[in-house]
Image (cartoon, rainbow, N blue to C red; front, side, top):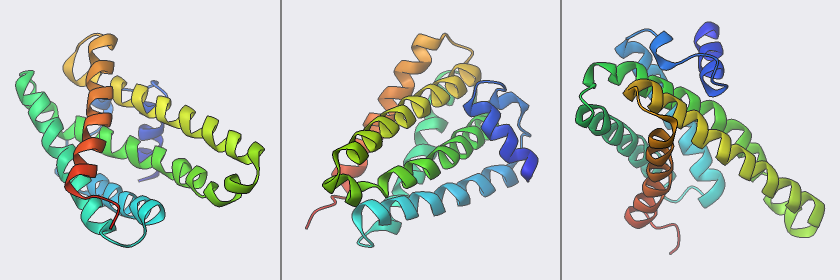
Length: 171
């Protein structure tokens, strides 16, 4: 398992591509479970326990559905297991430091330097996530970086909008 974590880390750093992951439903299930757990913790941290599990489950379902559709439309459905495992694994890894940064919300409200640090760290992590996702998409679809980044950004902002619409965070 430590080797898989190292592989996800290398994918996030563009040292490896998803094709180097095993084509395994067990790996998909393990990364989906980890993604669900971290997504739940992140939703709970940001929005409270109200609908956190529902939001996490909807996030996972939407991610699985979108990547299944994108790969099918591109004529590459056989790459689903490796690509989705990479997406879920890398997303899980990068969500952990994002949760640390989100934990700075309260101190940031009182101290401008902490707010600035949290903002810069959040921006850096979001950009890193988008490029890591773009790298996975580029490898899975065998397309150019520009096309992969368009898909990556569209997915990230589109899924956020869909989840916010489906599961509002306010009363």
